[in-house]
Length: 544
Ligand SMILES: Nc1ncnc2c1ncn2[C@@H]1O[C@H](COP(=O)(O)OP(=O)(O)OP(=O)(O)O)[C@@H](O)[C@H]1O
Image 1 (tube, rainbow, N blue to C red):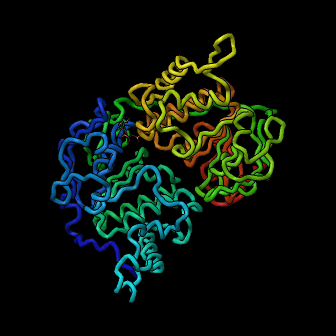
Image 2 (cartoon, rainbow, N blue to C red):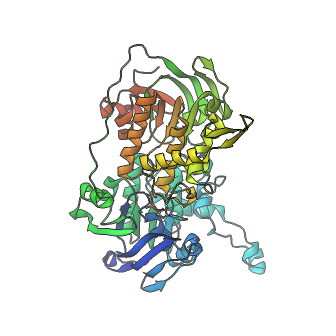
Image 3 (tube, rainbow, N blue to C red):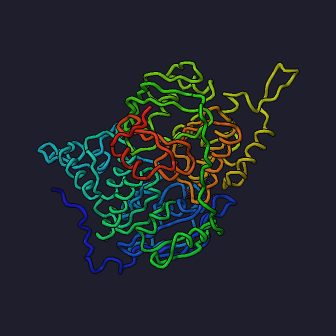
């Protein structure tokens, strides 16, 4: 077995020695100062939780620590960083990696066609000893795939998950991608500090629990971890200390054992969050069916749906829940034509052609994907245009007639007005509607995706993981807005989420998808145990 995790740190040293010190760190993007005078230290083997609202500056701070080129390209930063007793100023992520810092970003950085093992050892492959190599040197040497598989297996074994090293990335569920990313970082022998930027956002609660355990184990081996998450209970569970950022200022540094979720929330957003959002009862005796799926299958790698039979009632919010990789995510992607699909989909009593993304859009359906980077946004374009584009192209909205109707031009004024409305309503943190979407924080980009959907006002809205990466205050706003559109404009909503509590707080009915089929449909008031049974493959009696 290949040995890793022998980092020369003695148990008695752990949590004693200072590993990282940030002093007086500030960062501006042009006129916009996003970090002001940040000071903190991290010791070896310590888990520090970093929390703050969307746009508070968490990712920017981590990009500085990880030497990401964006920081230098946008004027660098002020202040001092000391790592392992030495003053450092990383110009690129390679410098940070060489120094012993690993980072798992909000977006995946894996190569889709490569196996887990190949991704884990990428650029650090084991090479075979050979006669030819002796003569011609490293350039002619061959990769030792067997050794790489072994190394990958060892790294994965430290995560406590069942992940096959031979599975290709594009065939894995997202949770496994996340674990592959982490395995890649910890496989580096010199890693001392691991930055995890929202690693649990794509995981179900169960999978997140496994990851938290892994973090504790890595910390006990001497690796320090900076952990960013919007799930405050995770921070309470796993961290030793918590740093709270608000608007680029360090509000507080707290010992986890001496604080609680309420205190952290107040420090983060400066106000208390009201009651948990709750769905009002809505029952119809003879509901109209707006959409029906019959024997629907979807070939989405890692989220295959096999045999979906589901009737969606007009005006309801129906949830699609279930464990990662069981097929819930495939449903919207299949109906909306993004992945190969078969079977029947009947919309307003008419069978629709699958495998053509234009058709469902033209008929009045819209999809906010779980994958906002790939299919959601034009990063180079303004916020206001991003919000308006689908409505312009699908619904001919925001067009004004000129020359007595002979020509149509884009109504910039209306587009700006619309974006201003959503910037206020969804509290999108930005300079103005003219700012490029690529310059927004992850959570604020997610809000722009939602604003696009609300602007187009479809008959059916498929929405997947709407609050992923969104802070605790904004989460409430997003869920309330979904309910408001459902109530006021009768929008039928099909909500896919890995957070059961989120589904229970807004849905009229919740369908649990297990092994590519609807295992059963429950009411949000049903016992948690019933949900658990369906998720683990115990069939319910409420199949359609
Ligand atoms: N490339 C960039 N150009 C200009 N401004 C940027 C850029 N990247 C980030 N910002 C700004 O910096 C601020 C902090 O963003 P950052 O991504 O650090 O927030 P965050 O706390 O990680 O938020 P989230 O929880 O939503 O991920 C935001 O106001 C954002 O608009």
